[in-house]
Length: 283
Ligand code: C2E
Ligand code: MG
Ligand code: MG
Ligand code: MG
Image (cartoon, rainbow, N blue to C red; front, side, top):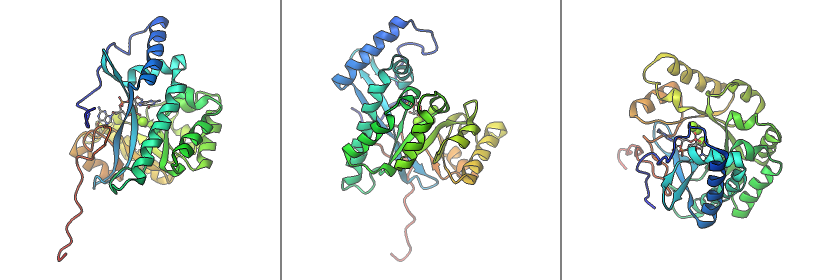
């Protein structure tokens, strides 16, 4: 596998189109086979400190290397896996694999290696009884401290029902960090802040995209950092693609960012815009 992703994963059909139940079932069955065959891999995208670009953590993102169709985006197969329940098995593997890799990075010799990992969790996984135990097993099985793991959840996942909220409280008590993903795009984002014991907001790319243009998205981005600060939470600006965006976000008070500008998801993630610490005169 290449160290860096060249671009967007290939799409073999339009995810906006309605698919038949038969097609879902076929993809679900193929996914299980892919998991067994080792065709699913995780890539990791840097989450960096502003303005230095120092690596703070990585987000694990799943990839499907299909032998005939090539690279398939999680935006395509995760929703299918969610509908047919395959996500439970898939998600447990993703958690275990991300914790395994993080433990290797933490115990290795490379002091620049990521020390923390974020894992995306979908609605159905979170709603199931036993999810907290799945997380605990992934941590203890790999010797990873709970504080090195962040679970990323969306509003949809939290309000799915089942055990979701209860599980988030259990994870919090275990010392696992919780991040609210795609923050600001849901219907009741502010309610989330009242009900979920979250440590971080991931401010959605749709606000970051227009942050340098002024207007409403810029005002929202400027306000969300204040909300995070006021609540004692971290805020991560998602989808930063330009130096101008990074500079503006820093000016607004953001201390953490993620996006192609700093580094694409890769099996061995590297920060491509890292500022060397200034040389100390006389040393
Ligand atoms: P997400 O969790 O919000 O992840 C961020 C997505 O934005 C990733 O897409 C990432 O590659 C992309 N991205 C990051 N920086 C930039 C940028 O600067 N520009 C642009 N255009 N895109 C950027 P990806 O990997 O295709 O994942 C899409 C979504 O699929 C994720 O959104 C997440 O909701 C879901 N997903 C990915 N991996 C997993 C997983 O392991 N489990 C679950 N349940 N869902 C996953
Ligand atoms: Mg995420
Ligand atoms: Mg996100
Ligand atoms: Mg997103």
